[in-house]
Length: 254
Image 1 (cartoon, rainbow, N blue to C red):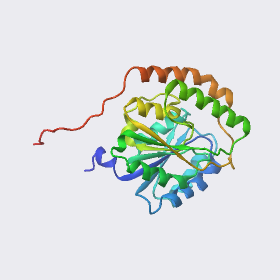
Image 2 (image 1 turned 90 degrees about the horizontal axis):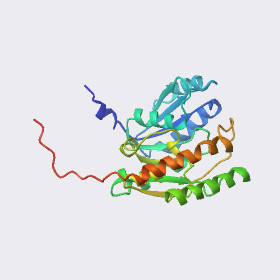
Image 3 (image 1 turned 90 degrees about the vertical axis):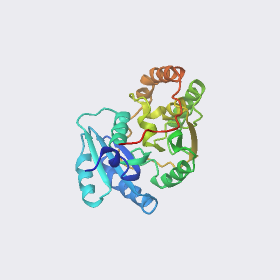
Image 4 (image 1 turned 180 degrees about the horizontal axis):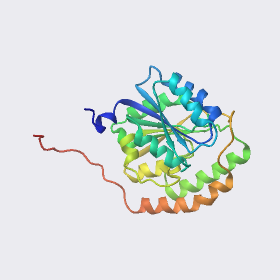
């Protein structure tokens, strides 16, 4: 009989992709992930369909027939990107996690380099490797918004991350599951890693124009929750970090 603990480590790394109405990007992105990861690691691709109203479900079903490494989960109603990422991580059967936006702007070819950086760490459970879109392929207005938001966030949280909004991040599954979960938490993973006594390293990654579909976020969508989120994460950080625990001895199993 296979236990849940064994299931959690069936793969070395799971690429978790939350999607909402991204049908046009399903096939090209899955094919890119496969190309990037084949031969690099024993991997799983985990898609979480967050209550899509287009034909995202049908496109995923088509890919499931072609891609044996693809796992698919669905939220009956849209719960947001953070909830979808959390579902993907919980369902993943891997030791390590790579998160990736489903719009195709993150480049899956960058995952191996970030993963290699994580595996170099003495204790990978206490390191988050974050993508840094140093040369963003967005409008000047969107780049300004991002630059301002990152500056304010770094000042208030001290999370040592120039681009926390980049969806490409690599960390251990254990580390993610040890973090508090709340709406929009995916934007604060670096701060949450530091809160638990870990470190964050940013690696420059490729960023691409959105070729298909439409953006799900606008300036006012982000501003409407940014202040509340920042105050919440500041409170969490101020309430103390998690201790690093080393095993001295465990009792023998009878």
